[in-house]
Image 1 (cartoon, rainbow, N blue to C red):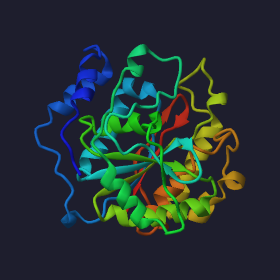
Image 2 (cartoon, rainbow, N blue to C red; image 1 turned 30 degrees about the vertical axis):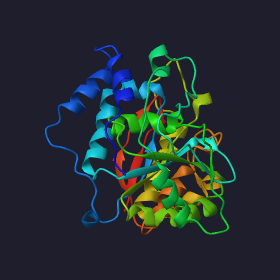
Image 3 (spheres, rainbow, N blue to C red; image 1 turned 90 degrees about the vertical axis):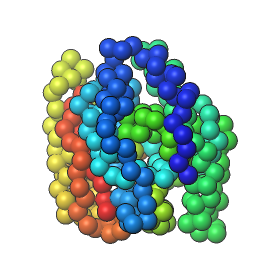
Length: 299
């Protein structure tokens, strides 16, 4: 399913000012000496990921970009990527357009104009769509939105992780915020990992934007630190029941998640794991604007 690197993406990237941190990230990625080995069946199943994704300011955080890209390079290069983003809540279950060149969704405001000119034109994803259909029950209808591209919860982190835009990508909608149903959806997607498909849940470990102290952006609020510590502990023990009861058991609620769409993609990630109750491997931690950017992979 791999395709050539996208010339339209490369052309758009070439217009980014040379001094911009993302331009530096692209230069560093291009300078890597060893090619990124493509997944083969001998590699076994890919892990499932939960990513705290960031809006366009992620492209200005060199350290965070380095962590995400290094994470991607530590894994075999996937044959395709299926990603669930916090920013597409839609039932019945839906996917973005399978066709190359579909316009991205610039679902943010108030940022520099260069972010609205960015491209991420990935290859035809028709084969991936058929694979997704193949693992869903016959009673589940999968609707393709032929004019919808990836939203920023998908293309922002993936552009950092796989900047050549040469891996087919589809975004899957979040049809519910019921943890049990999302775990089951993840379980259905589990066989895709054995076919070289990277299954990703994209959210943010804490996302209390209305409560960020913009006068002290480096200060970590208690509600954010407490929720993150609680989630880290539960994930380290594989306590899915505790995580599923986050609305009533997690400290820092509802400040950490005044709405829950940035946390619930985690349940798709855990459901897609071989054993959802196995401790996960944390790959990124720390805070951005006081929000926990904890990210992990599950085997």
